[in-house]
Amino acid sequence: MTVTAYVLAVVLDLFILFIGARFLLRPHPAAAGYGVPAKPDGDAAYLSVKGVRDLSYGVLGLALLAFAGARAEAWFMLVVAIAPLGDTLIVLRHGGTRAVAFGIHFATAIVVLISAGLLFAV
Image 1: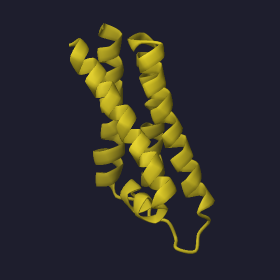
Image 2: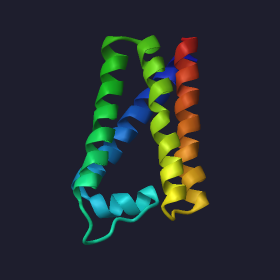
Image 3: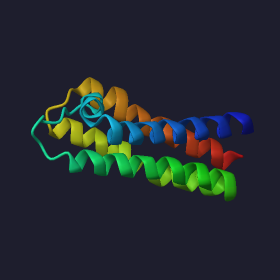
């Protein structure tokens, strides 16, 4: 179970790091994948904010796992699950599909919570 807990945590941290980088480098396709496409003439700063937020979460998660251990990473995962839960509501409130809201964002929150549980068990 220890290997599974660490591997899942690293994969999730790298995945959110990738999403953050994508929002910084290719913001409009990233927003479409998020479930609420950005307007072509809209304020791109908000897409950058999401990119920096997600990139920071990924780096912080990897740093916690490397330097503070599984328990610190578990608490981080527990707290950071708020982000995909909030993303679920954002997609639903702004015209995104239920499939994306629940199939991507809510499912991500569940996987992050499972990761937290596995890390607490280590």
